[in-house]
Length: 209
Length: 209
Image (cartoon, rainbow over all chains, first blue to last red; front, side, top):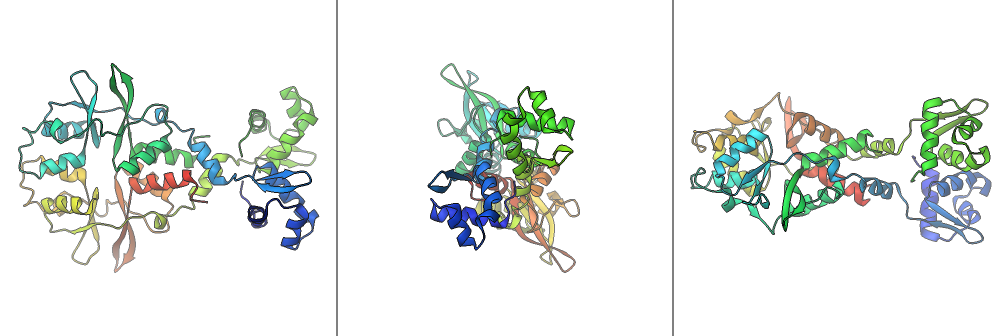
């Protein structure tokens, strides 16, 4: 619903002077009450304004943006996650780079002997190691990964938008999608900036309702 | 504006059977015309349906998703771009990695002797070189970069959402923001998945109207 100029001005007036009657709004706009009636009806029905008998109009705080937020909360991780690529703690940095190319991912999740999440490895971690003086075939990933409990993760039912905020705040490229298992976390997926970008594109293309 | 179940069903009916009269819709829903009147008024005023006298209701194609798309088209690259990090064609891969860490970026743009865009260098390109057999201090970036004309770029006034689609389609991490200069392209910014994710978060937080 695209608001017209007059409807935007009405909202601005009500925001500033609520409660305010239809007559008072008409006066401020130098229009008759009758001219405003359809606009007020639309704004009320669409939820922007609330009309209380014998008191006047209130602003509900409902905006197009708040509608977006509401819709975005409904887009969940489980609808956009990718398959995770995992490596063992004992793998070498060299093997991890090879795995990254083989799996075509930018982050690997590291699992311990019980198959539970113990770390995250980014291209940046591996590039730092690569230009260092150590032999990459001799460095185990457990030495260069970010490790629990300093790992940001998410779950199937989290909204994609919360993961987007996490990724920005923690300055990471990807977060593992996990579920509880045996007192630890099992990796069941991967959420990256690519997945978030895809959700954004899908929203714009109208494939999410 | 959050549609209720009945309003959604009305839209579905009109989509399928337009033009259709209020009576016919009421009949399909097993309700009276009077019961439906407020819903039909709201759907018409909000722009979902169009009522033509003596013909019936039509579906306008206006949906919450199409509103999102409309709003998203208004978010431009110039509102979300980052400062670009550039290197010269003659720089070594080793120096490029150091620049990446110094500037804290995941992509570098390569410029030729005239200061114009000639290539793009990603962490992936550098990581591939790092595990190869060559000495990184001896490999110039011009050998390992993606080069013009195979580079995806964007401009200040492009919608962020178009860049998001480009990034997904071309499977790149970042695109340079350019403007024309001396028959070539001057790099004036950087758009990454991080910038797109930030735009997505801002949209959800209601800071874009």
